Length: 287
Image (cartoon, rainbow, N blue to C red; front, side, top):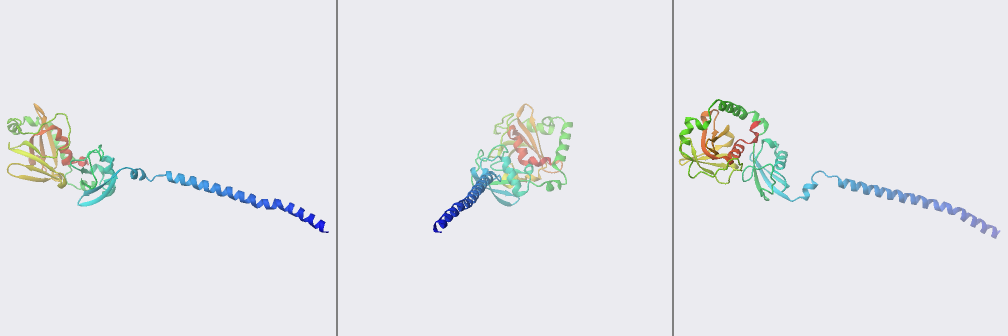
């Protein structure tokens, strides 16, 4: 009987061995499943890390901290130093709600949209002045600047060249002032950091123009006094090359609603004409 019992036990153990292998198989499957799960999770992590919210690229670039000043409000802005002026305007738009086309952005003069902040040597803590009105503000103006400009242009087309008109000839016939600034025909430059000087006004007296960008004012200085004119009050700016001296222009600032309010300046260097118009009127003048 003992021999039989031993045999039965051996048989039972032998038969039980496959059953013990089943959990191993299940464990193996679980291990594979876990490995697959970890792999999938790893892939998911890799995929998630490759998705950018748009700020990652900026974070890796050299940044510059700026102080944006608009409408008596101050805003802190951090932006890559290799951003263009156009990109800066977009960021200002997101801060202030002022559309880029309505902005005059100034840092040592009117900011170029094409140049980078590095190109114009903007540094940490720099103050960026922004001047401009929202579309609603512009539409609320009783006499839009575009209407005035169109009327002035239409009227100019009917007249003979300005430099031939008697009222201007008496000034131009005095000749070019000895101390007038050097002019470059066909060139376009930003406003200089010093006042434009050595020019004549309508009475033949010397006049200088100083652009106070931080205060959004144009200072018209003569020997007798200095008029501080808010740029927003200037309705229009017209100019025309002087015959025989096309590297210089005669220019008028319209300070009121009619041509009678024009303040004339003669012998303005041609390379600064566009910069003067952009600074005084801004690119948003067409709205």
